Length: 209
Length: 130
Image (cartoon, rainbow over all chains, first blue to last red; front, side, top):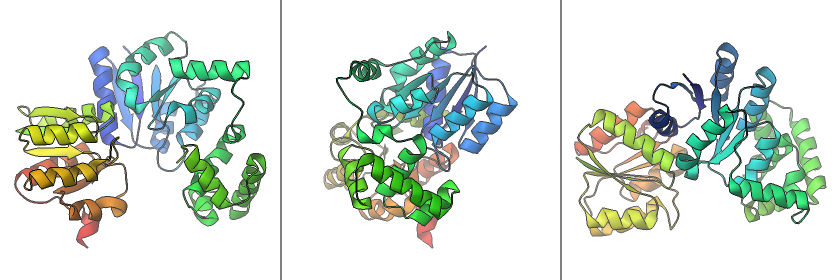
């Protein structure tokens, strides 16, 4: 029997994932959680064959959750799900230890294949991600400015671009406003930008928000 | 009962379909995956209720809602979205939707909203009633 943990804040998505999985693995034991805190509790208290985790949940981000799962139980394969295009997040979550990255628009065809693959201890890489990886390796496609940011910097970049103030970001991430300002300075420097307006323009032009 | 579900993410269409089928076992359910297919299907057949996302390729749920209501003014449409209530609820209800729900809502609440709308009432989020 396969034990699968689904983490997504949207009940309709959890229901859909459960249905897709049950069609292929009728005897699967599936548990659903709706936020990162409950996800971490389940990771600590039980054993799972596969974890399926949304990348955007309220509170801490899915990437942060992934990093924590990998610290607690490094051997559990984690498949990350996103509404965003593969281009934006795939490399980031794969580097953080995910066994695969799936876009919610193609999840029906990809999820079952991905579960079979990661249960064998392998990673599930879609053809478009593989192509992008190959391009990076061959140097044909140099890193774009946001790709050199750390996960935390990238998260803060997206929040600034969405119009959040330093104090709002500090509250949400449980950081001090000074620390957030330091991250902001680092983002501007790394990306050769000058202002929050530049950050917002960059994020819009690159489909980050 | 005939229900049309419109969402560009198949996993969400499957989720909504499954929630409805558990409650309304005889429901006939159709699916649309973008704005144009929603408008076409909404007009080509009669539906007791349409459940639609806001963000879809080709214009989106609000644009579709307006076009459908021009042709079928009494069509009952429930909008379900990832956006927070305060961002969109008022706008979609003013545009003629019968109800508004966010996707983090519990499955029972979706069933409740469908039942409310099928009985002829509007399903208004509590935050808008105050």
